[in-house]
Image (tube, rainbow, N blue to C red; front, side, top):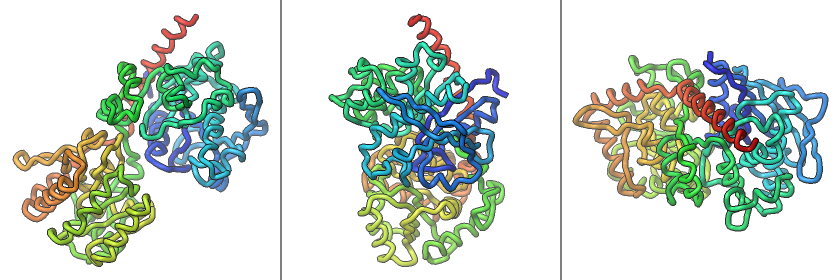
Length: 497
């Protein structure tokens, strides 16, 4: 039981396992579960997209939710449910004009400009939902740009209302996405014109939802300590580094956890054999099944290097595509790639699989079952990201004794310890620069460790599997941040009063 039970409203555009685009959804779902288990009252509000209409068990409210936008009222139907395998209360907002779409970030018309209405609607609806429920949270926890107007409402139109007493926290999952729209969005949202200024929403003549959320939130978090530092630099802040540096005393980096009920080699039902750090025999069966799934030669004594990722330049996978011919020529290895993304990268990996049958396999799709098998069966996990706010792939990989090969950035350097041949320590292999040669030679280092130092390899696997990435620890850190946010809000309101 938490020392100080809090009421927490999570506002999010996506939530695992309901609907997922990226790691944001995983964080919202898993963190909410962990906080409830620690005694907090956690509720999630999100849109009800088209495919969610098939979700069984949700019940609609008899009365509609009135959403008070600028100059007019709109309506949404509230569907109530609980997050699967938890006591987290879930509220899904049905509004077909905005959310009756198969995609999270593209509206029903297929026009991304719809987002200038869709997500301000979500932010306003989250505020009005608290009155609808007659439930006032202590904390409103917002996630990324799509929820960035919510803290602004708390500081402006709602300041003298019960919900205006709530503190706010915004989590920055990826600074590349900020929500840029025409200034007319401010009027549509029903916000005062005064928020459209440099110390708020305005950025280069447009409204920037993320910038506004950063300025108005009580506290700010990122998904790793290193990323919290990187966003304060021109390279990592995507134009908002000055603002984040200004608010550095309110900025915290919290490493994501993983859902150990889903990702555990000892209990995973999606892999052919379970295993543990003390008994790795089952990993060999997983490797053989992986090789069959990717059309690789089923050989127990060749290292498999795997990718489970969105196929994009940000992930550094263009580097892997560029060096794969050299790898195939110079090293006795196999490569397995799972994912979808940029068309040219998809085609590059298909071509490599065609060129090197039995040695290079590519599944240009996404399958949760295949993701589990690949993570469990591979020897090494290739994740050469140019930037990575936290990353979950390397956490899953280490849990299964699959050693990550990562670049020294963001959450990767916070979670992976570089192999020391002298001390026999480490949990993976790290390189500094995002270059083809750096990745090539680091894969070569891992390959030589596999063949020349097998006893070190087993030690590294056991080290990796001995790490704890439980959400319970991260939830404890968030408890402290919430407490600071509540106190900061009290001080702010005293000044206003």
